[in-house]
Image 1: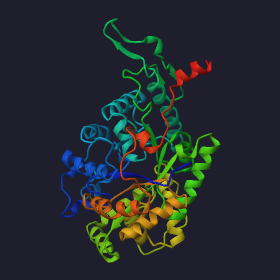
Image 2 (image 1 turned 90 degrees about the vertical axis):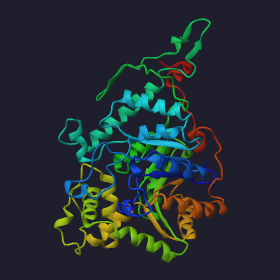
Image 3 (image 1 turned 135 degrees about the vertical axis):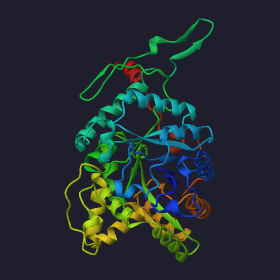
Image 4 (image 1 turned 180 degrees about the horizontal axis):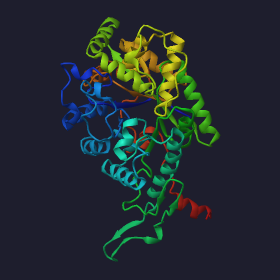
Length: 450
């Protein structure tokens, strides 16, 4: 049973979620590679009792040549490296790093996330993704991404291997007894010896079981196979839904699939993205959005449209005032985002010009442009109507968008009894109300299973 307080994460993305944000005079031009800049944002979020920082990632440049010059996205830290640095500059806030199961190896990620969990004293989380950019494949010796279904099949096996590696040492295996000279109790060591369709991993891991048992597992897939995967493994599920009704449908579908698998509702937290542009008046908020829109070149608008629709279109060659068609070729990339955006465009009878502007503003997430009351109204409505257990907050511009949210919206959420005023636990699991997983080998022994 969930409580009456929503969970909040902060989506960290260089200058902000809006593609034009880097051009705003208030934004540090080199913020993407400035640890002090990120430390300042982390301090603002931790001071407001956000549950976690969330870093997205792609191991590639995702734009095509004509758009690369105008984007600020290709000058930023790798997530685990950045969050490891921030672990020493924060005390309570969770640290969510994105890492792909398509072009990483399980042993590497198991070791790195266990290390991050120790560095942060139990605040690490892994955002599990399958690669979705066609430009990633060429960085790893392939011409094309594997098929969408194959990527998820590998991801399932990959996650089970990583969890198995985290379990290879029991919680109390490292006794570190100087008197006897015994550092590790090898009766509490278990080889994984995994032999699967995609992966072969012996183990054991060369670091103790993480403080949280497993770092929190985050997932964001929303295609049919992605929802199945989220229902199986996701403890926090980051969703993209442009309307409250879309969010309610996704929430209900995901929770039901998780229940069928025997999972409890409060152990699968659904957190849609929300883009809040806050002003003390509605007009002020609208002017902030218009200012950001003025910074975005048409090359970025069309590039974003093509990319989020899965590179099955060529928006630059289209009549932008023609209606978006009811169907497009299915993509092998981000199938869920293509579906969300196309369905919305058809419902709203968008022209291509309207669709690419919508994509630029929100990329398919909930968006609210208004006063603190209006932002809080949408968030509380979504929470109370079981469309969300909380939100991944995507400020359009940093640091001012985060400052506005912390100073104006957080107090309103607290006034309504919907957000906490302090941290309640030491680990991210404790703060999210998630159970610490049992070690599979210890559980098997206790239950008499082979």
